[in-house]
Structures are given as C-alpha cells and as structure tokens.
Image 1 (tube, rainbow, N blue to C red):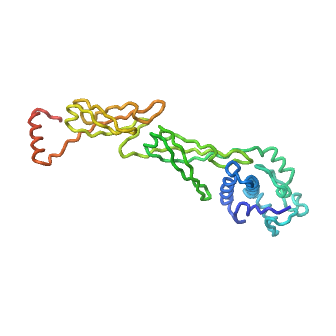
Image 2 (image 1 turned 30 degrees about the vertical axis):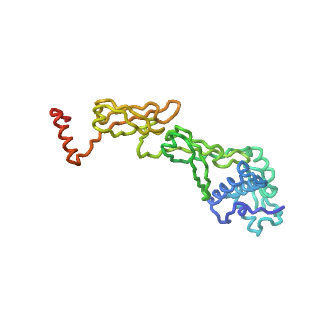
Image 3 (image 1 turned 90 degrees about the vertical axis):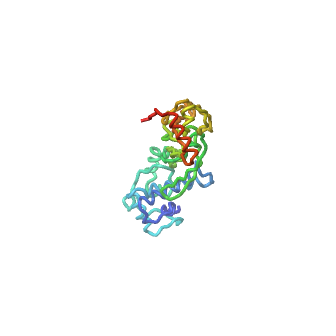
Length: 300
C-alpha cells in the first residue's frame, strides 16, 4: 500500500498548530464537499481530507502518526507497518469515527477499532449553522430585492452569495440560506447560513417597527387655511389633506403606507410649520400687515 502524508493532504506543515490544521480542514472540506463540488474526484478528496483531520486533530493520534512519519516516509511511498505496530511496537489502537477509512489508516490504527467506530459513529452528521449580519437600506426592506453578501472563513477565503430580501422585512429578522453553513461529516448535509438583517438609517424616513415616520414642512397659510399637499412615501408620492388650524407637531396618519406585511404599517406624518423669511421690503410689509390683522394673538 501507499503511505499517506496527512500533512500534504491538508496542505499544512508538520509543525502546524491545532488552529492551522482546523482552518485548513474547514477550507478544504467546504471546497470538496460533494453537495457543492460536482467534480468526479470530489468525494474521494473529501474522504481523504476527513481521514487526515481525524488523525491530526488529536495530540495522541498525531504523535503516533508523527513517530512513524519520522522514519522518512512521504506520500506515495510503498509502505508496510513495522512489525508489532499497534501491538506494543510503537503504534496505538484508537477508536475513530467520522468517515470511510483507507487501508493505510486501518493498518496503522486497527481495522477492528475503525470498523467499530464506523458502525457506531459514521452516521452522516449535519454541518453546523453559521451566523452572520447584513445591513440593507430602508427602500430594499420596503420593496424587497436582492443584495450580495461576502463571507470570509477562517482560512481567508471569500464567498459571495446573492441573497433575496423579502418585501417588508423588519430589522432583527433572520434569513436562512439552506446548505450554506459548515460542511457536514460522513456525507451529511451542510449546515445553514443564518443572516440577521439590520436596516440602515434613512435620511428622510424614520422606522418604528412596521410604521414609518416623516416630517412634513408646511407654510403658515397651509396650516391656518388647510391644504392638500404632496407627501413622499416609500411607495411613491401621495396627496395629504392638511386640516385647517393645524399646528407644528400635529401627526397625521397615512394608513398602510409603512412596511408591507400581513398587517401593513402606517406612515405617520409630523407637521412642521416653516415661516418664509422677511428678506425684502415687500415681505416685511406683509408681516407687518399680518401682525396688525391679529393684534390680540399671543402664542405664549
């Protein structure tokens, strides 16, 4: 049989730390997982990666393998275990699980132990879920759409995913992307990617749950006499009737103009009276005439 160099399989140096080995394994397992990689040899590479990780992730198991490798063996060399290996002659019997094992593996660590571990532990195992956070703008939260998400794993690799955003999503909600988490073991399915959604502040609108707030500037005569004025909403501009005698701070409701959903939110419009500047003789005269028309009015 051929000697398997588990360090070469994982692409790490023999002095690699536990963290380096774990990172390399995750990177390669994701790359060659049969659920994602449809190349003809992906499954075999995935099994080899799992086997290498099983040996190198544990200090005792790794030490036993290093003892043998120190004899000068490298990947592809013709190999037979030394006499007495695994029976007090330098090797050790270990109970392994997590995947199909090669003849090389079983010759080192015990065919019976590997089979027993396989019968007991080689059930397909689902990969772990991954949690991440994305921020979207308010208009995307209202209308829905898609956004690109870049994810970096511990090995520095980047994955770019196109994420569909449902219309009316609220801040704090989670979008689940099936199969985009950590790869499974022994042919098990990958975990999911859980994206928590945040909504960035908007320059004009304020979000409160499903309701949207907006401040509308109006003139003194619109407030006093009443008027129909255009108001921006997330779904487009609509006309709003300003009741006569309105004051700054009054709130008017545009029903159903907030975030959509089973029960749509509303848009709450806060009125803010803006007086024109007295920046000309004519404007000053108009203000003087206005003040004479209401000699007894004192807002304080």
